[in-house]
Image (cartoon, rainbow, N blue to C red; front, side):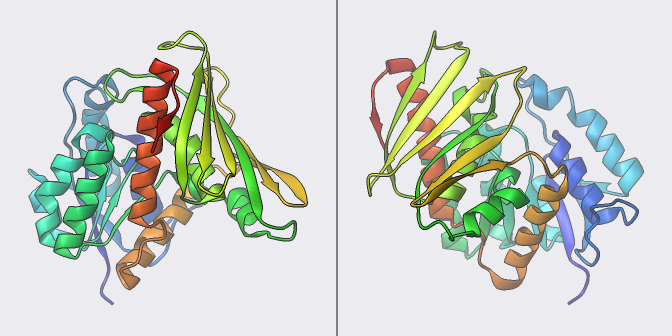
Length: 305
């Protein structure tokens, strides 16, 4: 196989830099040899989202000057030239519209978190990918934390009967509620529990700007999974995995940048096999979980998925 040409759509996030450094910089400790090369990127940027528009110029300049990434005029240019597209735009609101512009080029696409901000958009992206035969994968990097993977694969204490996951949350108007940062904790919850949640109830003290958040999901088989959101400055990430004969604690933040390398390895494997490590249907359910959690935190009611 000739060298894989990788393109970025959205240079307004640190993830664009981290992914590029892992792939393009052989001196980096987490470098992936023979992964290909990030060759070009489309900056993008959301004018009404400070976390996007205030960073896009700096990251674009750094990617060009330090890593040799050519700057494209349009997402379509990236899709035409690349073999694999990393849709890294930090604003989940624009993922569907950007995907609609590139899906016709029939290149595999990784969509960075959050996949979408509505379950309608998430389903539309998956449907378009299926119609065009485009492999799609999306995930938080937390899913690929080595300690989490080891805990999920270790079945010596029997089947998973529940989980309690925790991590920081931050509320932003443009990517509201649990979508912006709570998605990391919920991704870990789904890595442990798998799909099949049927209802969500959020306890939020003083919503909409509460200091304490607890989301309880009930699965179709009766198991219960919990996601706790801690407001900054508590930025710890972790989980308790409950099995039939014991409970294990998992630190999902102990690996530094390694989880990014492990995520990219799965994305590149998707190019070879056409099969994503995380099924799109699971990602759609996860987005619906977040959507329901946001609704429940405002209404105080249990919301069906």
